[in-house]
Image (cartoon, rainbow, N blue to C red; front, top):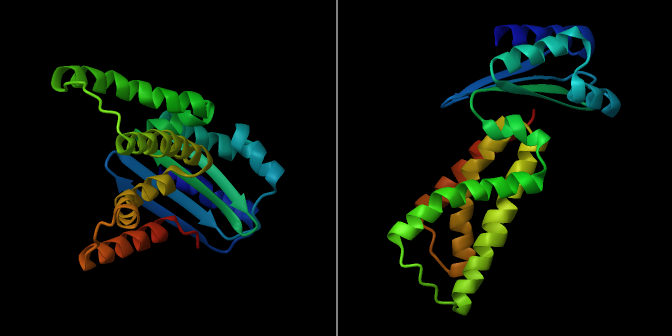
Length: 212
């Protein structure tokens, strides 16, 4: 990790024309996140595409090899106000393999794995009775189309296009958004403590994902 940071700072000094760089390091369970961001001239879309596809120069390729050796992934993003290199070390399997997987195939595999686990449990513990009422069918359609298919596809798309640390931070919004949907759609009440907690969570996610 030290060598990766060292090479990032070398690139900032040589190429970015930036007088400062922001380094973030965090750990969540088995995952370690590193982000190095400069405020330099950035890279052109063609140059960024070249680097993202197969690397450019000894420094970038060396960083990728170090990260790959540690079973991690590295992502490079750039705009007109600088560049950001994000590194994730750990066991976030999806981020490592999703970029090479068709989104439809990846979404299908998610549910095949869940089906293999849930089906034996249902056969053992459930009566398998199904009463097809309008309310049940509407709830089932919502669960299948929105909560399952759309949500998983969106997660895989975000992992493909964004840094894994930012995607992981967005997962913390699931409980407050669920409570908000229940309030708006089903008339459930929200206490002051819940509202404050939702606001604190949203602020924390914004701080974790906001680029300065």
